[in-house]
Length: 392
Length: 225
Image (cartoon, rainbow over all chains, first blue to last red):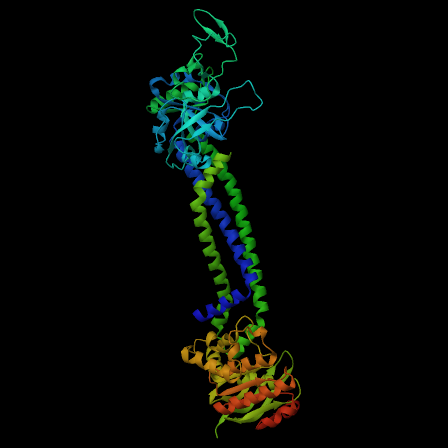
């Protein structure tokens, strides 16, 4: 048996090109559906796990899928915004965590939120410290790697529109800490306090104290209640200990925008009541259950997968037919060799093994390759899925 | 001297081709070097096939080394063939994907009734050295000249220490210089190991080296009759 396999191995090695083609055909035909299955399984696992840990989300009316994907992954634009005051509609029925994710810093999403978000996602600072004051930011693990930043560095937010010369100034943020790897979308974003996000949006700012300012160029109007500054008074583009006290907001913070609200209801009854409230016509936003939306998305994905599986099965049948053809041609080509073996005194079973051994080796090589590629896919699937979700 | 091959009233027929072979009596003694001559289609190769058990007679008796080859099972015939008979072919019939050493060892790789061990490997190397192929053991057979290929084929036939060598036109594809060398080699090996040699040939110039010649024209007449 081992001698016959040795002969088969020598045959396979001598006909390298043919063997490589056969191994490639079997490997590709087999590994593609397996790799897709692994990727889908990881996709399913990750998206379901993220959705499960996010009981309810509130956001502007529009696409439920857009809202959920925005609130869970921050990469897609939100369907619109809601006001911070929306948080009051949750009241004591649960905990509401605001999300503001429509600004970017060096193309990385900047998520303005509160400390409750870090507790919800169990995010821990691995290096440096957490958010301490306005203008601080904490980087997700991957974001820190991508940006090449460490605690103590600074990060400038992106301008919303470079042609808008009258628009807001980018804010130079202080990198306060870097989170440990979490293997979720939180690894790929920059976290700031919600108020810092509002400052970047231009809803709050800091500038020099104008109470004692005599320069008429800088003061447009002054009365007992207020001083109206001219455009000559430039807002600070960085928040530090010296100018921190000068930062202030204009307007009612309840009317300030947030792009989503994550709600953790106190109990099932509270959840039902909240869902009921947002179903009324006069509700100012919409409430979605991420698990429901994600399951709808997954059912669509798995329907597509069934088509792919059917296609893979057809390709598999074609490959098997091709292998049969190649084997038959191979037997025909080896007729003279087989005849010689027979004349010398080769046993019938050995002759069968000479052909079978070639196929066995080809299948074994393919199996090893498929196993290796499947293992590799399994190792990188999590990152691939995360990058796919990040790139959407 | 006892006979290596005993044939009595042998009959064989390829009904598809209308071919018949009938041999009343043919005895070949051990150690004899016998040449089968005769026109094409007279049954020389057919008789080699019958002797080696590749084909089976319709009637009559055929004993090889005292064994009734036709009475053996398929597997026994194959084992008998690989252990008792060394075959040399006109086209050499070496296995293209193996090197010289592996081609010589081939009988041991394709039939488990022959045990491959260090002594066999060493004998293979000795045989290769005796035919001047010691420095080409790892070379692929496609890179050998025709004379070299036939020398490898002779080593392959000799390795299992057979008692009978059946050579089907062993010099048919060789140039005159190689023809002489190969024949000398065959005769020398047969003499050294006391082997019986039966060779089919169309070349009457080489018959002087054989002890005996069997002309198949005789059998043809018998068939015709």
